Image 1 (cartoon, rainbow, N blue to C red):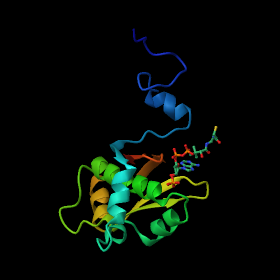
Image 2 (spheres, rainbow, N blue to C red):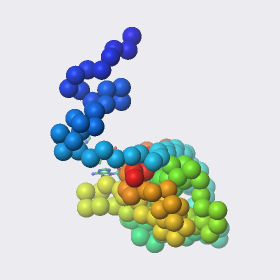
Image 3 (cartoon, helix red, strand yellow):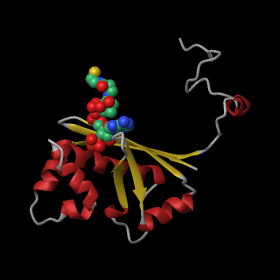
Image 4 (tube, rainbow, N blue to C red):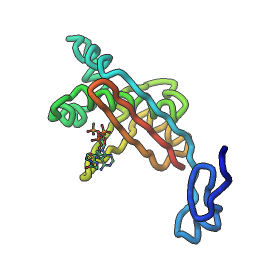
Length: 154
Ligand SMILES: CC(C)(COP(=O)(O)OP(=O)(O)OC[C@H]1O[C@@H](n2cnc3c(N)ncnc32)[C@H](O)[C@@H]1OP(=O)(O)O)[C@@H](O)C(=O)NCCC(=O)NCCS
């Protein structure tokens, strides 16, 4: 049986009040959207293997390609970056009406190895329209599956 809120403990069923958050020095912000995506790494193997399709250069930016190609199993890293693209599209509620380019979504990596997402072009315009100020992004992958979560914050 589900129990009620537990004092002093935070969970999805036991959120802080605004007053408690302010006391803790936290700012209340608004989640505008979330998105997740999972894909078979094999699907990415097949897409990347299609010579002359231009898939890799049409989807991934040069810094992403350089990052993935340095890895022992590049395809896993490509796959999670593709999942991140689909996840942010879900979080935003779709793609821009025109001029959509996969290259307008880029996953960078900070000094700790944590991923961050940058939008440009019409994807950035769409995010701006929705009031997105911060994009949170998390990736995970194995030899067979890759996934990503994206949270959009106002
Ligand atoms: C960062 C860490 C959690 C990644 O977990 P993992 O299971 O090895 O790898 P996953 O496939 O789930 O995730 C890989 C992604 O994590 C992300 N990542 C890497 N470092 C990160 C960090 N410091 N913060 C957030 N995300 C990070 C990257 O996006 C990476 O994908 P990429 O290589 O394509 O850029 C892990 O390396 C780590 O440091 N764990 C700490 C505990 C530990 O040392 N465990 C060892 C085994 S017991």
